[in-house]
Image (cartoon, rainbow, N blue to C red; front, side, top):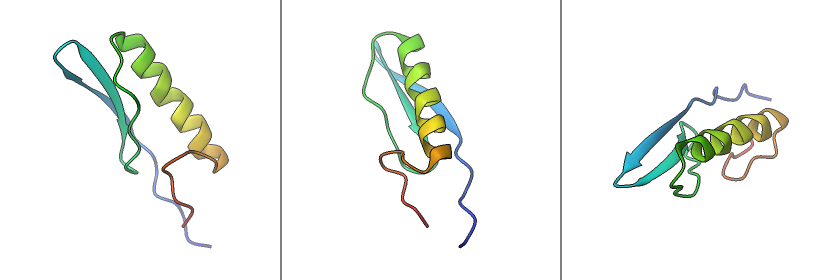
Length: 59
């Protein structure tokens, strides 16, 4: 089984909305609260580590 690429998340702002994104292609919903976008990113990393994250293909 090949190794999976590491996930690296970041947040981007557009107007008054903040979105979490990952290098795997995952993107969270637009949020007004930056803290919620960061929480979305943290949850994605946990899910990706378990191999069950949406938008994270199993290689």
